[in-house]
Image (tube, rainbow, N blue to C red; front, side):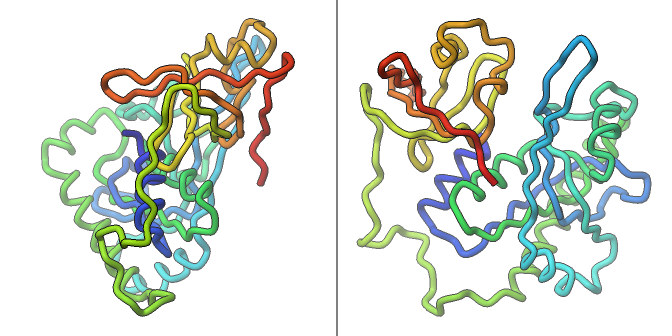
Length: 286
């Protein structure tokens, strides 16, 4: 399950007042070393864009860390060495070459990003879709995103970086007071609605979680997302050829879909709802 879908499921189940997403990352800056901690002031989704004959045109996606939680972190972690408050880049590729095309792409388009990881944008976007949920991404630096990454990993740097990030997150949480005093149970209460399953033929106003070369993953219910294949996306533009899925559906777009198939593993295939020759979609609004 990807980070966005898992985050939406957790948020729907626990209904938290704040979300802290903690893990490891590679450093993109010479002054940020292994063992340091980065509290993300912004999260960049770095793969959005379009390749044209004139070159690559980036279409940046950004999610801001909660101002309340960032300020709480600055206060709580004041005495902790090696803590940085800077943007973080998120992509679908492990960066292990600081001279690669990807590294140059980040330097050119996301020059203020100080670290790179693979999951933060999914969690941040899911929190954004859930409404007013304070969210903070905390990352421990486990490598320098260069050719020495495998050596750093072999030395145990990932577990050490994760421990540092977890310590920072717990320190921040200890400074927070819940809005309501009753303890939160990890078991669903009797008043919680029963989990809802999707069925073939059912229609939903879905939200695009992620676009890939072969289609778009669309959330239809909390914790339930399916694939709208590029062959189905063509129907949204009258059957025309689709070169870039993001040209038709951007992350956050709303689209009416119907469950076409659910395989034996529970994977959901979707198709667009077309009525009177038209499909209903809406772009993400800020």
